[in-house]
Length: 103
Image (cartoon, rainbow, N blue to C red):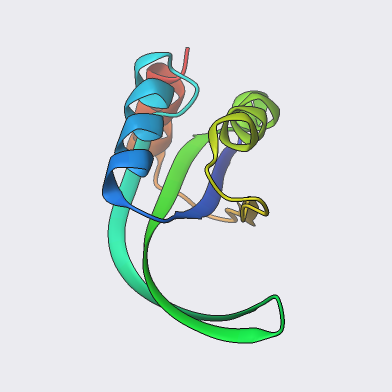
């Protein structure tokens, strides 16, 4: 089974923590790393500079479609980032844990 990483950003810690907790509890993802970041981006013809939280969702290929759907359904942004990162290499013990945690 292949590992998959999905990245998304959130406006505040409360919203990302709630989503992460739910997704890990229902085993859609094994882990979600959350970190505060600074983002500069274009939105509605303006350059924005704001604090956000980045979430790195770790799951398996069999769960990626469901994970993306849950992020989309629960996300507070009008246009959420839901980016899939291809994992080309991962250590076996971590992969084993990832599979076990999402079954």
